Image (tube, rainbow, N blue to C red; front, side):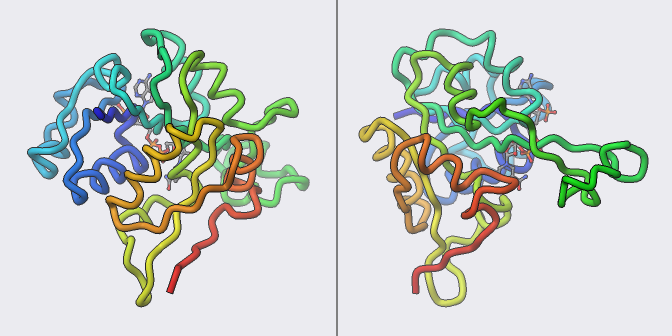
Length: 215
Ligand SMILES: NC(=O)c1ccc[n+]([C@@H]2O[C@H](COP(=O)([O-])OP(=O)(O)OC[C@H]3O[C@@H](n4cnc5c(N)ncnc54)[C@H](OP(=O)(O)O)[C@@H]3O)[C@@H](O)[C@H]2O)c1
């Protein structure tokens, strides 16, 4: 089972570190090309290597770790998915400068002061939209519900940290669960994509940003 990562920022790099700690191999990519990933690859050798987006996207399991605004463009030009697994690690949020943007004055947005706003999804949930960008893929929503720093800490406060996943394909979910467990986390299945996905999605999913520890 090969693993690819699209995006090498906070989430992509943290996921690569999680995999490397678990002894799992992966190809990581970003918009600037493999040479820009030399430091990360050096840190995580020999399990993590850099590749093009197309190389990462050709893996059996592909984590999408790009910002929401970039997802359609990144995913729109990739080879056929043919039943491969896409882990949707995105959250439907957009960022703005709270010092200069008119969005900072939006009284209906409780996160305006932080420069964060929810993206209008037109009544859909985010993984439905990601699913449209990756036709034929088996989508599992995971690794999105909390700050990426928690991905470095499966063992915490004398217990094990919980990670959530949701999806419509049992075999795909089992693969994602296996990654979480190999990395030392407690993996909790939240059911179907349109049930579990919205529960964990930032900014307002009821399970988002909460830390759960199994003692
Ligand atoms: N940050 C968190 O704590 C966190 C936690 C959970 C979920 N998430 C979600 O994870 C996603 C990524 O967040 P992040 O914080 O990791 O963002 P980030 O640090 O800004 O990283 C985004 C990555 O996407 C890459 N990218 C952008 N356009 C691309 C393209 N056309 N082709 C290939 N790669 C492209 C960037 O490449 P370059 O490096 O070349 O610019 C960068 O590596 C978001 O949807 C976010 O909501 C984030």
